[in-house]
Image (cartoon, helix red, strand yellow):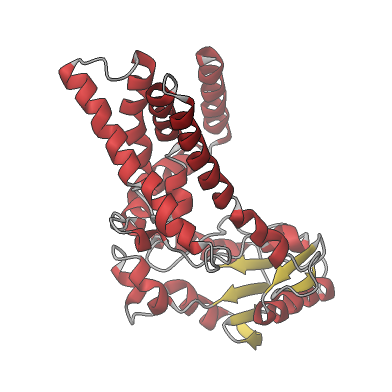
Length: 322
């Protein structure tokens, strides 16, 4: 397995080197991810449950309380407890855990630390809980496996109720799915590749995008700054290399490169969503630029090189002659 992984890595590096893409790959992956991306997106440790809340539809429902209590217990106190348990076992050499479980308890904090490098919400911290859950399950099994039937039943019952209650979020999907529920709060919108569900306001924007794509076949359309998912929905081929750009996160080098691509590749249409940066600024305490009054370079470029073809709220369709 290790040998296979090494062969894959060597093959990838060889391809990047021979194709002349190694420098760009390194700059846009390793250097960018551990550099400006991690620095700007890092947020405070969620010491209280409400620190895990986000604005996704399912978490905006009653199931947000699941995040407040159960998710937080597993993702923060439990992970810290397992980390301390592993440290205790290493320092004192006591047989508090089997060797393989002790190894998991030691490795687990590394996964948590990785999650802490970006914006912290329940989905990102869940990625780091796998090893913690294995250690907790082993501890529960060892504690109650030899206990009486009554004690074991209480524990199994509590775990079962907790798990079943956690599956309540699964119900939100069918309730919100406009294709199966005619009373959904979301509206069905037919895109070129599939039918999607959107809020009433978003539905108008998606319909305008579908109309633009159908009316100008074969013409290059760029979806910016974070509208990359529209490419598969419209069946368009991305005319530029950048699909996720935000104020204060995108570097000047990246923005200059994007502008050069828009010019050199004669991209006539740009669908752009002008985000209310100040409103999202509190979620990015390490990104002072996002809440500043200084105009964003990309928005200035579009305003000076393109003409507004149509606008609906914050969604702007830009156009320029070939």
